[in-house]
Length: 90
Image 1 (cartoon, rainbow, N blue to C red):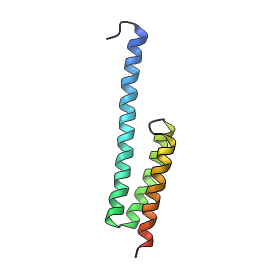
Image 2 (spheres, rainbow, N blue to C red):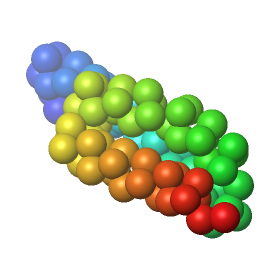
Image 3 (cartoon, rainbow, N blue to C red):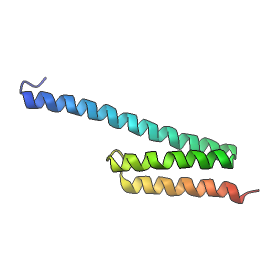
Image 4 (cartoon, one colour):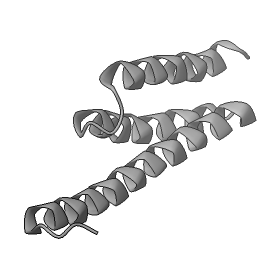
């Protein structure tokens, strides 16, 4: 354990930040999973509503630095394409 006060504070801040980032990342994964489950079930309405809920959460993770912006853009693009593909199939 660190003996210097500033180092101890750094450790406390890092632990808090790590927990916050882990929770945010977990939320993003949960939202993505809901979209993927709706797509797999072929339920267009549920997939669209799940995608609309997932989008701001993913963007928030990117703005907070938990995920990279390009990663979020790529995942959103692929999810959107999968949701749209449901509508195309009868």
